[in-house]
Length: 183
Image (cartoon, rainbow, N blue to C red; front, side, top):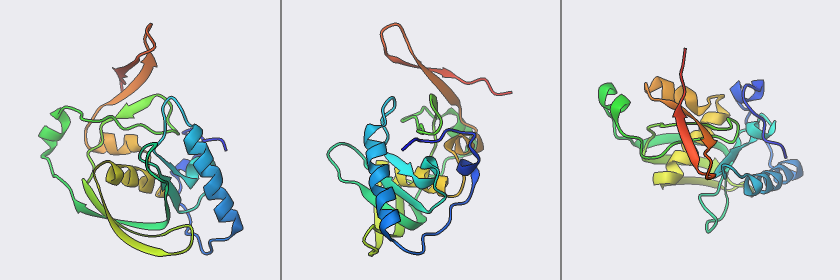
């Protein structure tokens, strides 16, 4: 599957609920798994259906090579724990991890997200789950959930008065991040 790139209109739309987990949905999930596994430069850790041209409330997460895929259908995400920082501190806080997106090649930014989220969702077998996720998993889930609501991470960066960066390779093949100049 091809990962669509911004400014594709599908990335800005609210995704539709999945009414039935049928053969087509299961095939879509398998195709999305393959697509995420083959994503490189950067490698992906999550993929939402809108990113592959399907306006459906579905995303999958694979934190690293050693963890299984986690499938989220019609997820409802509730923020459980978030460190609230005053806006002055938020804008000057050193980035701990840059967030990127497979639909925004070479664009990065720091997004302050909840450290713990509660998610109610269906898995690919139609089983209802109600689980709490922490740390990096919570970050990925919030990023992918935003995709289902037509929100790309630069909007969050700008809301938080953060900086966006454009990456490129230097002469040694290492990633370099230059601040983006916004008009």
